[in-house]
Image (cartoon, rainbow, N blue to C red):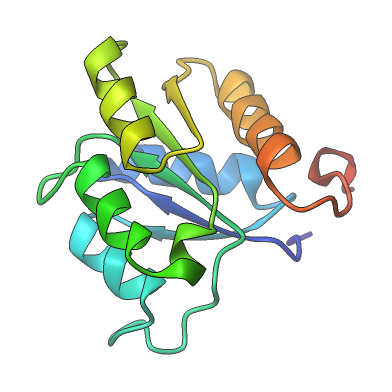
Length: 142
């Protein structure tokens, strides 16, 4: 069952996007893009994403082929509506300077990408519980 909460996942790894969709589609309506340019177009509702929903939150890979998470976050920070969307930044590397840059640019949280599927699911759901609206618990959807 697809959930009513729209989630945008931005990552250049097609396999990661497939896994995220499969483990979260019962709790969220999952939208995916694979680069920063498309992410900004989706969030700013520019073609080809003019009819895109406004996601309730975003999961953003730190390193994308065309720009980094902080560059995307800075751009989002210039628009009050986009700045309000909670963003979880995921990275393969546990580098303090990457976390500091992501948080300084507006990320609500920074995590190393979990290697286990269940841990990834829990990380995303826990982020939503902490930073999303106080709606129904998506982990309990059936």
